[in-house]
Amino acid sequence: MKPIERVLAAIERKPFDRVPIRHLADSEVNDSLYDNYCIERGDYDSLLDALGDDFRSIAPFFKEEFPARHVSAADINSPGGIPDDIFPKADWYDYSEIKNQCEKYRGYAKIAGYCEFDFINSISFVRGYERVITDIAELNPVYLKLVEIRAERVSAYIKNILLAAGGEIDIVHFGEDLGTQLNLMISMDTFDGLFADHYKNAFATAHAYGAKTMLHSCGSVWKAIPRLIELGLDILDVVQTNAAGMEIERLHAMFGSGICFAGTMCVQNVLPFESKETVEYEVKKRLELFSRGGLILGPSHLINKETPLENILAMYKTANEYRPI
Image (tube, rainbow, N blue to C red; front, top):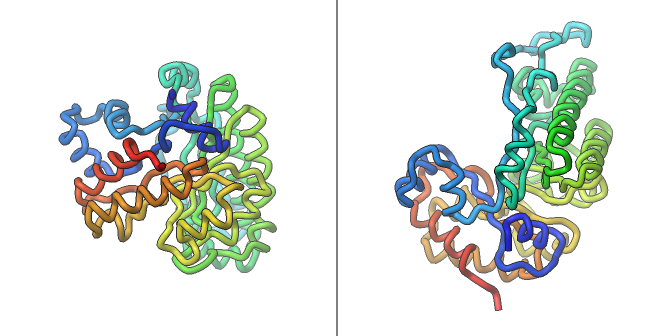
């Protein structure tokens, strides 16, 4: 099967030849993998092919006249004081190569975006994390305006990519860390009041252009999954299975038929500290649980440089070769 056929079949619970694979790692890990496969460093597409990765990222270029900058909103006490360049605007990007990128990666599952559509993490960069948590609790007007600006600008950015691609984007990637290690970061009532409509509208836009929706979130987010499905989420990304209530067997039993999970291989405990045999066991367990689809296998976040190379290779080799009976 072509990678895109394999990915869509797994998402839609149709027959597929092997589990789809998605690789995420620090640059130091990738350098070790380049050396292992005798691939020239920087030839990322060849590395992804060697690992069996079924996905390719599609993105516009940042225009030179809009250099990267850091704008602070930490001391702003009125919505009227928010600088106009607090977040990048959609027209700061050049979308002219999007169609060529889609053509280059024809046959792969093409992903647009990476975590840009977020309202806690992104605003924390300009406001400060502790301040954002206080803002949410107090419904601070400055924060509410920042959410509005962020939603409008990233929605326009995503729509421009979808338009430039002419219906060739397969997945739009959204992001927010909604969970801690033990529970949700915020209540679902707060989520609904502040963010749900923005996600619903953005998910609907992706679907209107024929794309699936993927949301990155670390932590214990199982309580949010039913609501995310209602809003139009197709794929929950990274899936931190060592967080409370996020055991892979439990997620499969509760939500295995309603949403696709991406990631799930623990980068905190299993990959860095367990044996190669344990890694192989964990991969096989997942492939057996999701033998009829609903899983994209990969790490539960970026694989870090402390992870033994043999464990990384064992994960991808098992995912590529093991077939549940």
